[in-house]
Image (cartoon, rainbow, N blue to C red):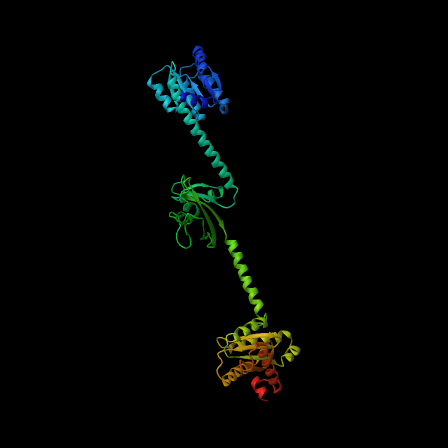
Length: 448
């Protein structure tokens, strides 16, 4: 009784098509069916039943039919209906026991074969079985709708999306991912592997260039981001970022990943250009635009940093002699050429840790480290004087240049870097007073 109530509770909302040619059997059976079903549509033969089903397919939940009927038998009708709908529940009410009817009904996927006169217990068991089938079909339809909904969502995403199971097979992918499928590279087109679709290879990804995000997520149970390096058909390198998120079952166990991929080549190229631009700007902020030597700001930073090491060093203040004459008579382009050549020649005299800077105009400074004796210091200064004595050629002009050098020594002359620079400048002007093309030590000025 309890089972009967459960069956009626479910079937009361179902609409059925009842096909029976015998008027008396039809009337008595309808009285029985009205106890179970909300609405009963009636056809008097197989042809009429088939046409009614075709025209009202959306409104019919179940079919109950006799077998032997004029125009079209019940089994013939069922076989035609199965061509239209493979899943609708169908029950046969018949007085025939012949095996051929049973066999045909089995092949037609009939859910129940009830012998007339109708055994109520048998009919309830058949209905119970049909209820299970209907619930299963509803669940499958719901899953299908969810799948289609999910698929419609991921199809709106411009990046390739794949749901990948533990065995590397793809459970779901958006249309952009499907466009990448090369059937010649896929062993089973009904169950393609992620590496077959995205990399056209026959084994899972590995190595530094192609780390496998699936194995990483399975191992760590957390999200993973990797970058794959590829080459196009023309040999151009490009990079793809893969973001893999764990796919969990109801027990919160990782059973795969949801993977999105994006070509980040342009992004990386932009980052690289920005980094190069940043480096260029930093270089330009610290170097003279004409000679590419350290500029005044960078020199001052280096001078302070060197003094903080508490080591003895010398500071050269260098001024080119009669440079203004070249600028005024030959032109500023010639003057620029002289500055570049003079900078190059002075750079050639530098020691491994020395620093040469252009303060501006024709003034230069040099930090000489690893200082030993005064004689060696003067020898370094003479190297600069000698380097600048060689002629400089500019277009049809042969130009000659020299320099005056003033030297102060840390910490002998001062512990303060500004004062040290001032003393070297004073020594340089003393060198100019003494005829140019020579070097003077500030400590000698103090003696005088």
